[in-house]
Image (tube, rainbow over all chains, first blue to last red; front, side):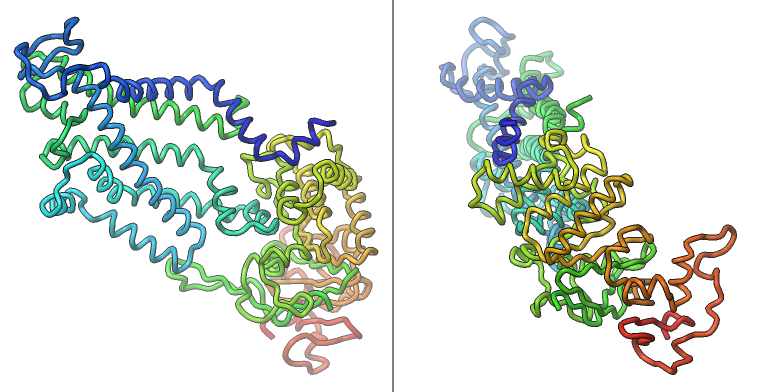
Length: 294
Length: 292
């Protein structure tokens, strides 16, 4: 009796508590998050324990992993572990900034276009398509020529500003199909405004989808950043996992058998993106009560 | 009159560039008074649900006006304090990621924020018992864990929690078994005596029509016949109504063409434009063509 009386009014708190209950019991979500958080933690605190600066040269060149150099050294004697932990930081930063900006723009454009429809949709859709067909590499070349990308944050910003269109299109399509459902009308008849309907009726129905969008944008940003680094449009200061891979490639690490140079950054990028994907599958089960029961 | 529809028309634009149009509602005029039940009968695609959505302000009429208490019917918090609707598909009326009883919490948040939690829970339980639901069975469940009939009754209970004056009931008994259906109809009858106006939308000649003072027969978006329920059912003037009332579709025969229209009362009396008032309050459209 009392439990039901309490359950009705405290609906929102109850939903949150319940999601958490299922979240901590979901193996996929926990595994994925653990891997990502472990790498993030390594990136955050690792540099504090590494004495060497990432690009500092030493006499011990081309050394395989040893007790002194955990991940070995490069052709020039740079400590790969130092590069790795600093690179993790840069990679997470560019992923979060790029993916975050793209996800926010994509969600706002997608939700508004899909829900409001009509002329607003036409205009936003046109804008989306224009940005979609602009070759972002060419734009970045021009931007770089005039402004120059010197930091990871600026690189993330530009990636974010050019990456959002496909997310906006996907979210718009989903919103289109959800807004015709009768529970949206019922919410309207319960006195909810447009913003509240989007945030509390439509978005929760695609929460795992939105998270997935962010994950893909995060992964995409990391990969785009690596390619930009390769053609010399990356940040000129510091080091990133992408830069490490490109350096390894440039100095023929594969041909020379220096596996310790390219395996750690490659494995880390794969682990981050892969673990986020596994977490997303778990999150789908947490948010969707129907998947929970099977 | 509480609710008044005046020459309401709804045209949908379809196709890639909105080039083609579909007229869902054609020049419909009627009104609903407090404490009156008006039943709207028509086959699938006749535009009855579209009319319901227009009245609820969920879509905008292309032509004509809909007024409630003299003010235009426009979606908004104040309008929904007076007018509520129940949709025909209970499964899509609930957000699948939330528990079904969230529909009550939403109403409390918007319209009864001051009511103490305990008292509100008691009101919810009372409303549920009114629609013959066991509160312990339906509260705290997800929509997919409940049956269509239970969900439909939750929606009715939701409407009961507001002191509404007009209810647009779109096929509200479609998923209820016979005994529950009677209970819900008796509940409506009781609410009617308390002054609730009901627009009872249905596709068949179910029991619910006998609650109605007036019946409107809709076909392809236009009114073919309307009048006091007794007159329409007892003395149907339009061949379509007669066909509907005989309610025995014959095999190998098209439903619409089953009966020869015979003499057209409308032309006999030399009427033109709009509906012919054959008897006081009993209106009928031309039988020969839909556009006449």
